[in-house]
Image (cartoon, rainbow, N blue to C red; front, side, top):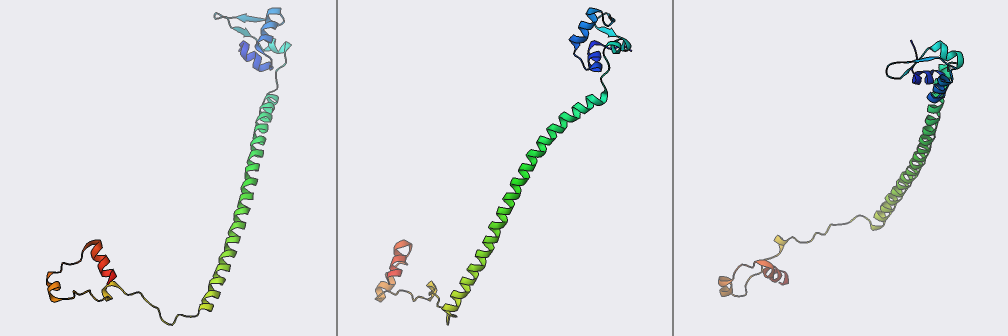
Length: 159
């Protein structure tokens, strides 16, 4: 199995132009296929350029991802701290409201004691309890029209 130029670059950790220059200078032997791609023997490649340790490549990737994750962790910690502060503020507000509620209850009880118990409840008279307005004479009673509308209501109210 032979490497292409891109595969050789990945295997050595170098760039494609670096490997292409080594081929042009004759440091590495390589064959060109029908499409113009290089076919590089791995033994020939690694004779000049040592293979990159896969652990190093994976370590670099892991280091990059861990840096990204650490920045995300810091951002999330900041949000958690802000939410904890907000929660404490809401708890203080709730406690203050409870205290105010108790104070108002005590104030209402004190005022009830000062007023004393009501002896009788006075209700406003209902419209049915009012005596009807009667016409002054019998003739007026015979010809009287029922009071309707706003003016009839005002007449009843005035009487």
